[in-house]
Length: 69
Figure 1 (cartoon, rainbow, N blue to C red):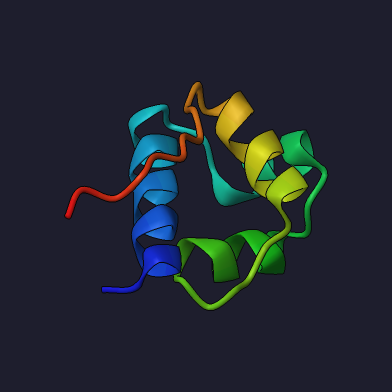
Figure 2 (cartoon, rainbow, N blue to C red):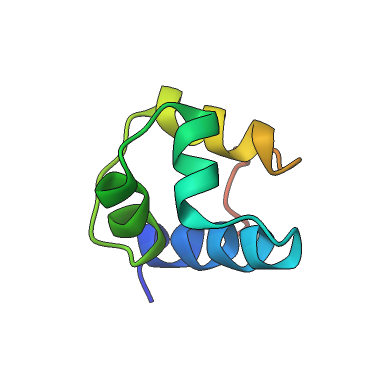
């Protein structure tokens, strides 16, 4: 599974857990519903700004770390 697919899966799981529809989240994050659908299915390459808006609304945090070798 690619990174964007995993991110999309996590966003969808959190959205479902919070009982927020795709339409509601798209409106709150000011992104198109088609864009959100593509993010959740791993088909999009969203901007960092869009991801940050979505994750902030869902109470998630984007973290970068050095890979363990």
